[in-house]
Length: 245
Image (cartoon, rainbow, N blue to C red; front, side):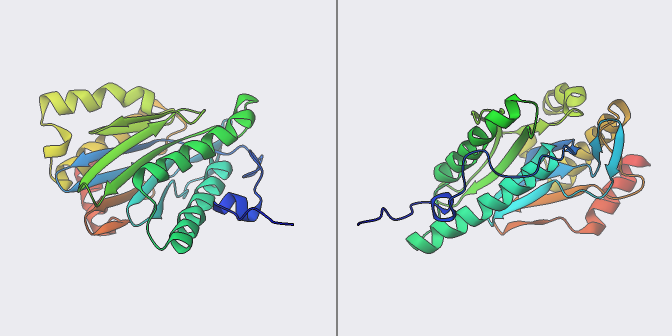
């Protein structure tokens, strides 16, 4: 009897739709991604909450799916981390099976498919999370930022994206900065970081689920032509001191 070979990592491990993650509802906010002249900057607070309880103040809400794709997560924390780990393995599996990197379009489709698979649980009010994805396309030498809804629909914004309850308080500030200061893609790394941290500080003042950065530094990642990596803590500390000063 012939067996159909596995075509994806999900097929290989037999992961059923909507089975990823845990039912524990710890949530995280606020995350954002902004373009700057050399790449994309991602910033997140560290607070994770369960109802009105602060569960953790050291949460890592930004993860690299590979060297050219970074995801920032808000919402159900356990489910989102589990899905991100699945996507990391999925991208590696594709590369090893096909001896080449998955295309950017393929990566985005995998992310949408993972969110669509989680939709039945999200519809019941369990496990809903909303990611932001920053990506670099080597072939086109192009940076892009994407955000998604709970059903997996994908939207692109060339300048910025934000998610989480705190994002509702600062959404218009992105446009104000772009119009009153300078467009995001023309800002330097330090300018973009300072503006992003200022907005995160405002969100923390107006949204109880968003943590500030007086106790601990926020999570900051850079995606540029050299790859994806956490920002140097000294760079973040200097920008935080300027914002809080």
